[in-house]
Amino acid sequence: MSKLVHAQWSSKMTFVLAAAGSAVGLGNIWRFSYMVGDNGGAAFVLVYLACVAVVGLPVLVAEWLIGRRGQKNPINAMSELAHKRGQTKAWALVGVSGVLAAFLILSFYSVIGGWSLSYTLNSVTGAFTGQDADGVGAIFSGLLSSPGLLLMWHTAFMALVIWIVAQGVTKGLEGAVRTMMPALVVLMLMLVLVGYGMTTGHFGEALAFMFRPDWSALTGGVVLAAMGQAFFTLSLGMGIMMAYGSYLGEDVKLLGTARTVIILDTGIALLAGLAIFPIVFANGLSAGEGPGLIFVTLPLAFGNMTGGMILGLMFFLLLTFAALTSAISLLEPVVEFVEERTPLTRVVATVAGGVAVWALGIAALMSFNVWDVPILFGLNVFDLLDTFTSKFLLPLTGLGAIVFVAWVLDRKSVASELNLAGGTEQLWSVVARYIAPLGMLVVFINSLLG
Ligand code: PHE
Image (cartoon, rainbow, N blue to C red; front, side):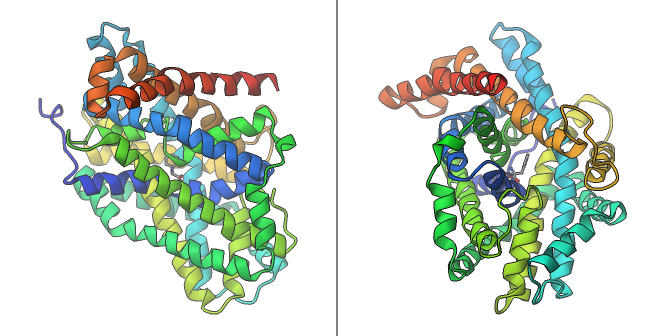
């Protein structure tokens, strides 16, 4: 009984902040911008926006709903809800793949979180001041080429995550969320950076790059990447939103809350693009630079604008905070699972899970230097973790969640839980039953063929 009625969010606002805190992170700034650059710009952006609206929103709602009804970790929640509806407990596999995805993602996410920490320090020491593109590039490659430095920052980041999560949901998560939500100031800083982008004389080029599509660049691979990004940035397909939903009271309106979180998340990503690409074009850098994109562009802005040192410090500090709130949400499903299945205490479960993630992260960080060798499908460990999770594991888990809510759960009770009736209920049901799942299948098949 004790674990059945488990902790709940202390207020609705805290839940929204926690969900937004999970969604807004490195995915919006680091990953979004480099994905846009790697995938040719506007065509990717527009498909991504479509994926967020048509697939992201229903899956987000589906995950919260499953979590709130199940009141358990994602695996137990899925198996019990399925059992109640007379269905096979194999639905629990959706939960399993979610927890697995969270585990794998955190390992490389923490490496990038470490980059952000390191750049916070660089801002304090004025390392970027007056640098040109070559200078900034040299700082970045200096970091990448040193396994020792990368390990130190990855360890520091992971230690912070473990420390916060170990304190439990109400103390640890909420405390972190409250004090770190200033990370939202990131939003305002992005506006300042977009302003800087306008002064470079290359803002128009960036706008066109992001919003004037060259549809010939659109391949099955680009569409799959866009869908993967939609899942990654909204923290979907990992059991995270399910786990958060399990702490959720009955009074929270799921659809409205999902809309708020999505608008915020997408807005920050688009602003990040508008800040970064003018700098890319103004300095003759390559948009397809890859995972290092923000680390070789933004320091140029900070190094060459008035007050850039302070702004750079604020930016990387807040980016680190945003990464932390996302990272704690990645560790949470793993810990919740271990805690409810084993006699381990919260603290021990957190340390055990966290150390396992940290160890895998070491393989990921070596991909940037001593172990930059293809191990499977021509990809190194880092790229393999990123690709396998975002393009396959997340969408597949999300597909499971939406199909479960749309087809297995009772349609009437779902409608009443979402406060839907009449035409809007019909719309929800068509999107959740057909459009979202079929859309995802088409994307998969298309990318396998092409
Ligand atoms: N969604 C967050 C981001 O965009 C972080 C995150 C990524 C959280 C993946 C969970 C999983 O950075």
